[in-house]
Amino acid sequence: MSRSLHIAYLSLQAVVDGQDTWAAVTEVIGAWEAAGWTVDRYFPQYPASGAPGGFGRLAEMRRVQERLAARMGEYDAIYVRAHQMALPTARRAAARGIPVVHECNGPYEDLFIAYPRLRPARPVFDAMQRWQYRHAAAIVSVADGLTEWLKREAGHDRVLTIGNGANVDVFTPQAPRRAGLPEHFAVFFGQFPAWQGIPSLLEAVRLPEWPRGLPLVFVGDGALRPAVESAVAELPDRVVYLGRLPYEQVAGVVAHAAVSFVPMVAPEREMLFSPLKLYESMACGVPVVASDVAGISEVVSDVRCGILFGAGDASAIAAATARIVGDPDEAREMGRRAREAVVARFSWQARAAERARVIEDAIDTGRDVR
Image (cartoon, rainbow, N blue to C red; front, side):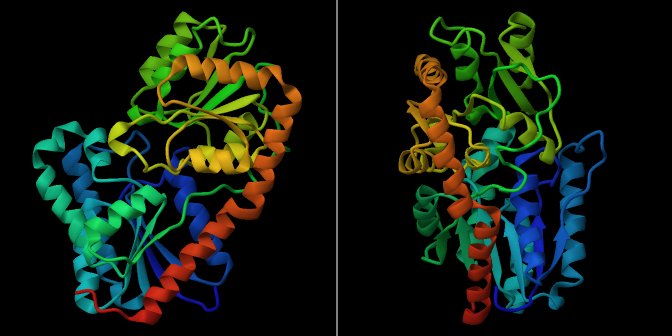
């Protein structure tokens, strides 16, 4: 980052400690600010009790964007965490010739997985997002498969792949152990949406191949929380649920696990993954058992930091877990290679610097995208 810039960062998804968005947004902003940039945050603010209903969320999204609109002329560029409802900001910026860089973390389908009731209006929502991509000064894509899809949707090649990362100072093998953890355990952490593969984990822990005396610890929250809580009630000696923890406390669990799971499964999202939990597990020096899908498999195979399995295959999960637990020497080597790779290539500092170069290039190019 060769100069000081004034940037607006717009995320219409709430940025809440303990959720994946928190790390992906705040780590990048923190690195930019440490390099001398001024970054103004435009995020929805909801009560501690949770986000309101649909109309309440829309009203807050409008309020956030009107606040940005009042100051838009102050900014060298606007960085948007891609969202259909960011269209007003994108249109205002295009009219004023202010570069907008979008960061895309998933396809259109994500909205309808999260909110199935919106599916009848899909043509409208898709068109809203497509317009933004077509008029973007640049797009940051978190996975190669997503990049190719974005180029087709946007109709241009101003799309660059820059994956997610990890804070190598927070997520470290030396993270203090959280009190009350089992002596030996496996871990799944993060959000609990349908595509995280949690049902396959809960099936695997019931199988005879699963290592004896190795409880599965869950950290996080989301749609599949009832399934996790039900498993805790049924199998209290095999499944432990810690709830949602603040970002910096998660490492105190992950760093002491025997294995960490990255079990994504979503055919409608194939080739479109860059999970934070992969890089954070690796930063902690913990071997991973991960779905063999693009965006995950190439990292695990290249670094040799874990075992891949066919997405959704509970038997393969249990067998891979048993293999890692049964070979401590190889597990340590996997963890060592994982940590070294994240420090060298996948830290948030490195990822933020790559994103900064995209923004700088967009400003320098001065491309008229109206």
